Structures are given as C-alpha cells and as structure tokens.
Length: 301
Image (tube, rainbow, N blue to C red; front, side):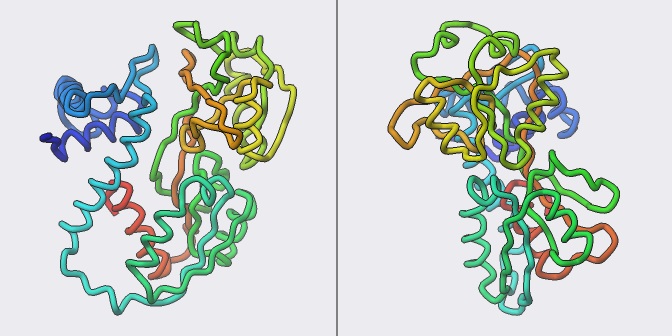
C-alpha cells in the first residue's frame, strides 16, 4: 500500500472544509489535484471516504474513522520534522485547563494521556465546566486555556481560538427505521418523526438554530442531557436525533444497532478547538499544550 502524506493532507482539508473547492484554495492547488488524490486514497484503502452532497462533501462512516488516523499520522510527522531532538526535560510548570463535557467524554482522553507522557514535568489542573463558565474563567485568568466546542463560543472579542477538528452532524436512526429506505432525507422528513433532543453542551440551542433556518421544527418527545440515553432511545426506536460523528457509536449499551444518514440540508458541524484570553500572554505550559494539540491534529502549531 502506497499512501502519501499529500493524500492525507488533501483528505483532511476536504473533510474539514466540507468543500473540495475550498480545500483546493486553502492548499493553493487545483481542485482536480485534490479530487484525484482523494480518489487514489480511496482506491488504496478500498472504501469510500467522502460522499458528495448538493452542499459539498461529507464524511462517510469509514471516512470519519480514517480521519482520526490521518490526523495522528500527519501530526506525528509534523512533530518529528519540527523538533526531532527537542529537549523536553526543561519544560515544566502548571497547566490550568478547562474542558466541556462533550470534549472530556468523547475527544480528549487519548490526547490528554499522550501529553502527560510527553511532558511529565508539567502539572495539570483540569476542570470540566459549561461553556459560559469556561469563558468567564478564561477572561478572569483562572484558567490558562480551554479545550471546548468553539462553535458555541460567544466571547469573540475577549478570547482567541484555534480550530482543531470539525465533526459533521448526521441523522441517527434505529436499524429498522423506515427512513433508511429513502435515498435522500431532509429536515422536513425528520420533522414527521418522534425526536430525542440532547441538551448537554448547548446541543438543543444549536439544533434550534438550524431547524429554524430550515423553517422546520422537531417533534421532540424526550429531552435528556445524557448522550448514552439518546443512543439507547434511538436504537430502541423511541425516536431519531441529529448529533455529531464525534459522539456517534454504532451500538447502544444494550447492543442494539444505530444507523447514520446524511441530511440534504447543510447542517452546521460541531467544532472542537482551543480558546484562551486575548488580553494576556499565553502561559508557557499552555503554549506547549496548544502546540502539542495543533501538531497532533495536523495543524501548524
């Protein structure tokens, strides 16, 4: 198998932008070059990574899984090129980092463990807080940096941010749901079904915005702050939901299958990133963490 870093870079850029044309502009190359590289990558892997929609491209289930591996690979190479002989023993201090529930539960664990192994002399104070509390504590200097859903960020003037990952939102259904037979599914179709609404990390507020923009309203039969409860309820056929690929798992705790389908409307992604106060210099430990996450996720550091 001959997969190149260029193929991975083009795939990551297309997946994150949701548009091959946008990825080409950002990479300063032709759209045909991006398309050819991704097609070649799919042939090497033997799976479809991206599916075309009227709004651009979306990750397939296999694409969502491979995206994580691609980021790790490109991040590891970037780290090796940037500082192959870097002396880490002198890097110490305390890192006060805040996270939101979704990031803590479904994103951070492996990166947190890897950072601690890489920088064992940096002491970490970790807080899990709602978005509003994170913004307040960052502004007051009570936290050095936050790993959060930057797509929910409100203090755009007081806080800097760096995007790490975009996670597409798709429709979750039970394995025997009648909508699975449709070639295309719209929000109007979903509005006719019982709906399970997640509330944690402002999920319901985000949902309200894109439902309203589409001129539709979900027929909510149950609200819960538990992602696992949503998973079980959807799998059991109580209702459907729209959530991000980051929190998706194909099976409920009871062992029932959950299917995914894209929607024809452009539903906004759930964006994970870093945030820190604009008004003060970023602390050394926080700057180290920022660079580590940026490089690990395939960014520039």
